[in-house]
Image (cartoon, rainbow, N blue to C red; front, side, top):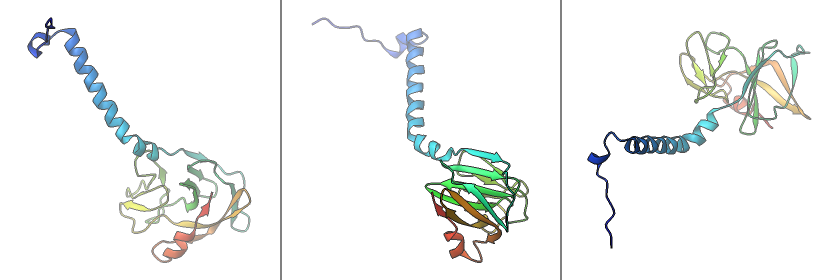
Length: 173
């Protein structure tokens, strides 16, 4: 049986084929790493939008269409954040519970909202992650009326003083 030529690393150092193999293996390793992290990366990517709600509150109540997909919408007129996440809808006050600075939207990673004043961070469902704040984002009373969410913007619910009401302030999408 004829013997095939076997390459050694010394024979291939510097040749184009050897460099191509290294680049190929590097790309394979990178692709495997990205594939392993892909579910976490996709979960962290949430569409976020800023809108100016057309209507003002009537008797403290504001109506919003139920979001069709996961993400957050900021109503700058009424200072409300509407969030849909994992089949649930929430309404939050736009201000940080620490010193009332307006929260900023962040995309990617675990942090969805951040206070620009003292860098407190929150998840998409309003749970406090880190920073100077001492509680979760303030939720607003919310209920479903057909294809709309009705939010009482005068009903801030604080997680540290009424945890049960805070946890219940959600609507199934």
